[in-house]
Length: 319
Image: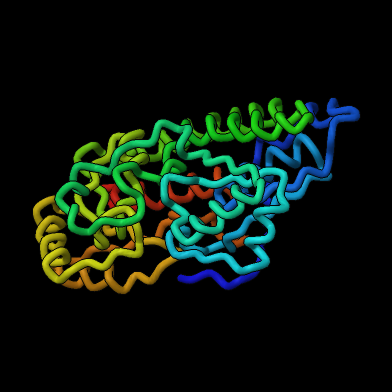
């Protein structure tokens, strides 16, 4: 899905982290009205929570509209201008925002300050199965950019963002970054319990692309295969790739294929139809939070919803 050239303002307030933002009240005469640009809606959600706590006059503008595939996004000229004028630009990095690379490089050349959060979160290499797909190189290289599927890492990301914003003079940002991080860590315990409720022998993930490596690593799952080779939705599988995946699904007795709300399920549906038995195609919120009313409107609820969808699809009662 290619994003329309419009600005999307993501000002989603998380649950616990905004209930008591005393740090914002203590900012005193510290600089206010910070202008922040984030690339993805996930970063926009977390950053908006921090900014709302620390500085009610701050603006957080998220370039990618809700429901956009970060791998397949190109900015408008107006959005490029936003990068240069912001006090801080927050990106995922590690090659996720492939369509923004040149714009971000140019913005840095023009004096913009860019914080690539993912690179500071001890990124994982792609899974072993990705080594078998070396002929399908994508923009990411050897490191996996999908860091947000490990909530512990994203709690650290909140602290990093808060500290970076505090460098502008408002120390409340650092305190609020810690508060938001604490809220993420608290919610993570529930997500972990949901995912670990799946019996160990059924924790098998077949995904539309290689996006759930951090979730598998953090919560004890196995990635058996992907519909699209590699870590980007921009790659194209061959008929041999798809035939191999069908064989893997049969061998592993995988109960479901996990697709992406931001992209078509056509390929996943085609693979499912070849398995020879009923297999569910479940759409997860992968690269974006959900629309209002979706139950995945911010980062925490997105992770809670995805965990519930995974657990429901893989539970023994699913068959």
